[in-house]
Amino acid sequence: MNNKQLEPVLAIGCIRRSHGVRGFMRVMSFSGEYQHFLTLRELTLAGGGQEKKFAVEECKIAGKDILLKLAGIGSPEEAAKYNGWEIRVPREKAAPLREGEFYIADLCGCALVCGGKTAGTVKSVLDAGPRQLLELVNAEGKTFLIPFENAHVGEVDTEGRSIELKSEWLLQ
Image (tube, rainbow, N blue to C red; front, side, top):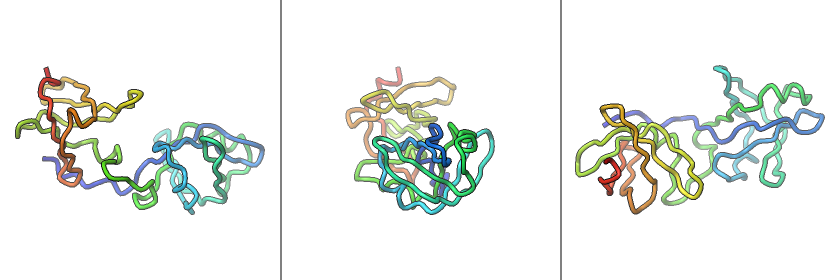
């Protein structure tokens, strides 16, 4: 098993584009939740191999987006420099999880175990419309897509870094 610690910082959204003339940024929430953005006092933007910390001056919900005003960014041109950048915050500032929910960052790197044997490691989680798919890479480097749903996946132990695969035929 991989004993990697759970990530202390999580990506919660990304900057879509600038908004208005005062340097607001239009943000997409990765979780679809918005309320946790309203409590942020600071955050880190990450993109282009860089990370920059900012104080949050203002945050408001606008339809399916969040409008975010960061200290030091006062024009649409300055805001546009961060288009596509991820918003990262400490784990405790991310959207709270409901029962049966997991942060994608916690699933990546987990061993997928079937019948007591490790079938591979979760490389990423892909959004495939109505469901998510675990991208599994086995020891030979072969990739499999596993539907992340109860019919195929059993117990998920993010602290123990393992996920139970119930449908071995998905590896054929």
